[in-house]
Amino acid sequence: LSFVCFTSSVALDRFLHGLLAAGFDEQSCLSRYQSVLYRKESPHVPSSYLVEKLRNYEALHKKCGPNTELYKKAVEQLKSDHGTQSTECNYVIWISYSGLGNKMLSIASAFLYALLTNRVLFIDRGFDMADLFCEPFPESSWLLPLDFPINEFDAFDMKTPKSYGNMLKDKVIGNGDDGTSTHSLPDYIYLHLSHDYGDYDKLFFCEDDQRFLRFVPWLLLRSNNYFVPSLFMIPTYEEELKHLFPEKDTVFHHLGRYLFHPTNSVWGLITRYHQSYLAKADERVGIQVRTFETDAGPFQYVLDQILACTQKAKLLPDASGQDTVVSTPKTKSKAVLMTSLNSGYSENIRNMYWEHPTVTGEIISVYQPSHEGYQQTEKQMHDMKALAEIYLLSLTDALVTSAWSTFGYVAQGLGGLRPWILFKPENHTAPDPPCRQAMSIEPCFHAPPFYDCKAKAGADTGALVPYVRHCEDMSWGLKVV
Ligand code: GDP
Image (cartoon, rainbow, N blue to C red):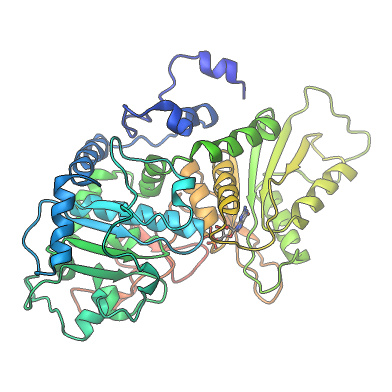
């Protein structure tokens, strides 16, 4: 990739077909403007309806955002605890929670929910969010103001009395069949949409419940999941989603590129690494290794699986060439970007390609930016490196990811890549086949409801509509295809 050549070509579309709004200060968030220099143009163009919807959302966010009269009014109402009058501005607050991949998936889900329900999205900055991401909406902020009256977010969990599920269960609220309340409306409701949610919480995904929630001005939401596939199953939103995403499996691809612009510090980590190790290669392959064993590894069976997969998918050549195979300066070079908490896998593969020639003569260079050992959620540099690595993976030409990992889902979604997914090993054995290519570029919803709202009975939600299917890597998960 040659920067000189790239920047001198005039037709670079920095605003991604209108997905990104103009009018930001370029220096304050270089990644917003420079990412096109590092990416191939996406074959997926956002619909003009999505673009229009985003501009309208930005206007709403500006009107109702921090420090506005309307925001102050809505907060006053919340403080006064006088039930609710209708307000011009309604909000959904995303509570910071879980690993970075999970966070990015649930923010994108919450944002889509905000778009569908004309709500304004605020994010709880938690420990690290402001260091990781630029502001996505012009002339306003998506960070929940620090003086917001509710701030003990850690206290919200499945047991919280003001959760939607518990209020339904305890009959504090009730939604009539026409969606109207049979009790007075609460000023805010906590939505517990985390992996450990219960059957009452899951009613969130039913049409009648959505009609009820429409009248609640403040929704506080905690989730570590990509719950978009189940939004597709709610009849109220079906038409709108069809117009927003004529290509259904591009929800995270577009919303992720719209929302997640790394801050200048993280952008430095990304661009320095890319220019040092990846830019000059003819082709880039990303391999994301994530194991969910109790001990850290490295494990021989995981290494075997990676090699079996990259050969099956023809991503990397066999290292069993003859010593007479000579590489010339014209020989193709491939850069392999490996990410893992453990350095063992990349060291092994790098050595293999040093000690043995490839059958094709290709030159394979293997790089791994960090090996942090274990997940250290809530440590600033750790999270910045995690974001940088997710982003670098998204800049590759072909991607291998690990089953169950949201870290990989984000990379595939941002990159618009249909990855080869390494199946989850069972009993310390490499699975056969080692991997398969994903059906779509969408992430998987790990904890979907299995309920037919109309029939009021359990149902296989992966078999109801053709565009929501069970995931490749998790049989009970759901993904949009
Ligand atoms: P998931 O657990 O794989 O679904 O992904 P998450 O991103 O939600 O949580 C895993 C966390 O562990 C990440 O956010 C990082 O903090 C850390 N982590 C896991 N794999 C890597 C890696 O390859 N590189 C880095 N830098 N951090 C990682």
